[in-house]
Length: 272
Length: 317
Image (tube, rainbow over all chains, first blue to last red; front, side, top):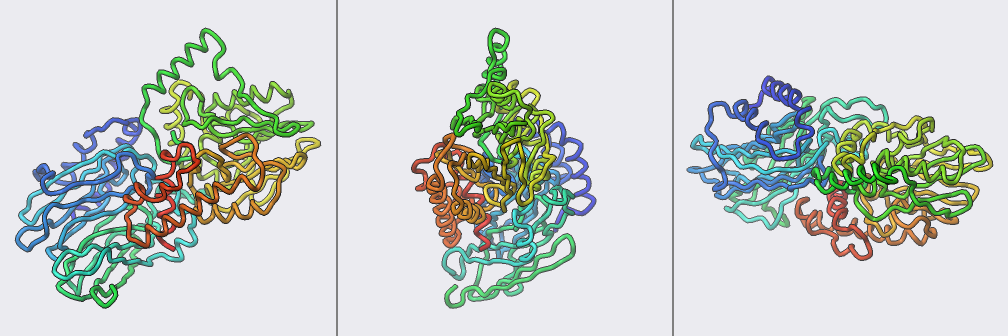
């Protein structure tokens, strides 16, 4: 389930717009924005200190604000009795702070996730994990970056449109049944934020971004993502799945223009 | 502020602020840096170059960390790149005035990075010449450049604004300064997506902007493959001498491009290998291509970001 509906996104955008001017000059870590966001995103929930169950990794200073690698590592394996149901990544100072919600199942094996984000300002990033007993855990890290959301689109826009929706799948390490297997999924998509300008026409490029990604192993969900404009161009994910034997991973992507893209890959077959 | 880096502001530096204040107090008691002129070398008759120090922008250097130049014709003067602040531009103007009182008719911005354009306001009345893509690049990045220059230079950034180009070069443009014709040419995405070069046809001196780095660590903000392709084209065109965007005031051509090509080709090989091995972007930034460091100044400040930019480009090959 997702907390983000259109209305909420709108509220967040309004909130971000109102505070944006004050935030721009802020260079020291501040929890002020989080204090505003938290009751909207996690109304009525108690957020427990998450250090014991998860770790959030992001560079202290982004090398490229449109391409900030962010990883959440979890500290226990997914079991039917005890598992993480979702992890939300919140980039406090971004125009759309809720960057993505990742939903996991026991078939995920391990609820780790790595992706790349646009970061628009010096900001805290919060990761909030929900466990299947209904508890919420939060960790945070501070990132210095600026301008990621309005960073010019791909240097080679025509090539990017030509490969729209193309996916690349890579198993990381050897396939092994009955243990979490790590995979990388790359989706070719401009993920236009609506804040970027065409370099030649000087018109703002309409927002066009990946909204959902669903990954299943032989029909059983292992990961689903609700995403927003804070994901970098060409959305990129590393995650685990728990195979019982050879099978097929299928990926379904939908974007904000209601286009959908699918791909499937055999896993555990000879040579993979 | 690392040069040529689009979105990498540094934190407000107390040191920079203090140095800025020192500059101010010097201004009150003696000749200030801003009022003095940049030292220039005459690399060919009528062709002058300010050779920048290999430093990050700060209050002491006024952000004049890229090579700047000017060419004097019988009617007017063309300035090539204007420095990283209004103060740097004024110091360049003072250098022009030490050699001629002819008007500055053109300021040519070799691309949109702040150390090349933030002095434009020192040359009112001059046409600002640039690549067509530079207009949008500045609209997208200009405010971040101004934030950065204020952080890095403190009060020495006073008066710095972004001035957009008003004469765009798509292909080739010739400018006649009076008994001296300049040929300006735009290039496909390479160091940035807005690179142009300027050749003085009289002396055959060729200003390559940041398409050429010598000694100072190159920064990639365009396309790695595109940059290598453009350099191969440049390499096949002789010139009496070239002026790199960063490096000595004047170097021989085309031999001086070899270290840069070696770095860029080495970066491509190393990043492709990492992509094939399933290395993550975060791991790559910390580990890939550090054996390419030999001979480059400020390598550690520039290389990891180059890896990130190259990685995002090459992982889709």
